[in-house]
Image (cartoon, rainbow, N blue to C red; front, side, top):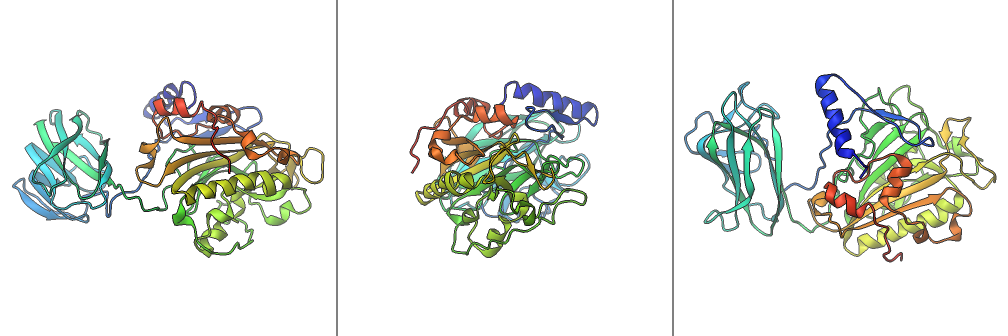
Length: 451
């Protein structure tokens, strides 16, 4: 967590409201200036089957109580209808509109429990403020228990509210309007409690540089691939950072393809590295998201050999110290964990097998970082992952020199705090987490096992 982060975001939000402002992110001298808007990033965890419910497929034009079949199942809408007028607040073309003391109730259960429930809400038209509550039932609707606290809708803009829960097995939810004017509800989401490993969103823990998929920002260009996400820096010829999720759901027996390939998904005009640009430079083509983290199938493995996932690493870093950390991470998933990892380099000037200090290769088009860093969030397999991170969650952060002597020490000796990496890079790591959690886990240095 970066000091004064809340103030910075508030300032950018105000600027976006007043004008088409852009946030300029200026980092240390070793790291080039990155310019980007300040998008609001919402992490995505594992939703129950067919959720979120968007109400886009439903039709109900009267307030009288009736059942409606939607994508997720059958719902009962009492004193509620599905609205699509300009006065209805909605994310798509439809949302639920509730009047009086109306309810929106699931007639079915989600079967893997729920770790959280969330809804978008807003007041209808020019109606007065209103309040509502979320209730849950674990006995098919025979009795109900309130989840969280009462919520007040005071804005005509949709706002999301989310409550953490701890239901296992069958559970269903109900929304109860309790007072005030008419109310719109949209995009009801339930995060399940399944402990089956899955492939989850790579940016669940945050977007460290506020990267966006916008060609106006070639040095902070977001590339969200199925296998990983990254911020590309065209002026450096490499990623600013690469972020990926790892669980046993990503693992298989596909062979290493060794198929280093130009990433042709980069926009026209962006620098595109090729494998030959590393030839005889004294530096390895170092993976950020490792090949062995993506061996479920040949497509996943080949994606790790795209040159946007590759950076120049000294041979003894790439083949010894860095790979030893990668191997250790895979032992953690074998022990029933899932990991969120973010890695990159900073500064310029590394020492490869040719000796001396090399600041760039390929005639200055590819920067050679002085140091490499990685942050690893370790969680037992579950769901609602960002919501499960606490002050006691294990966070491993390392910062290693890009030199041939790096292997003189084991990887565990290069552990630092997340705060230290933020200070060196200017990035805002783990930004999806609650500030109170960030302040604790980002200041600590891991002292857990290393093998």
